Length: 197
Image (cartoon, rainbow, N blue to C red):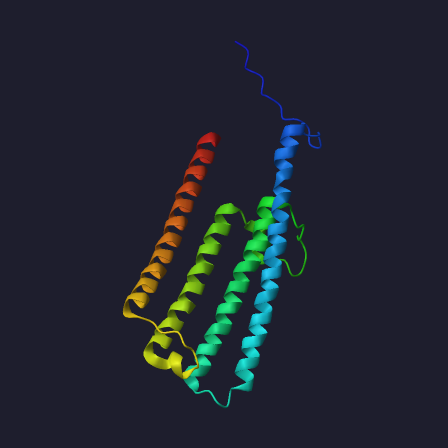
């Protein structure tokens, strides 16, 4: 019995048929979304500069707790901006087109091994960081420091409890994503090792 011939892949550079070309080309529809996120990041830069100016001009009027609230707001803006960079750069590289940054001195370290599952875990960790900052601000403002800082937001005990629960759910979700990713990687390694033997 003769061995069945292996099906050969089409040579690289072979033009795609019209339907696969349309489906594969549809990834470029995401380009306006990433450009929109770049514009949103510009808005966050303006917000950051506005908050920083507010801190500088009122530094002598604020006490330590009020300065802490403003600084936490600045950190919050920076972390959201970092999240936007991860989504823009990692998402574009993963789902739209290569950026060809290999060898560039400013190439992000994480970009060399980014894929959809790595991006999900990084985004989950960034969301947990942002949620932590929000929760810390809530705890500070709930202690009647918010009113002293000129903030009109009041927090109920139930509101603080729900924010804490939601933060805990973010953490559990990130752990779940990392666990499922680990199981997936382990099963792929086992299948790869099985194919070798």
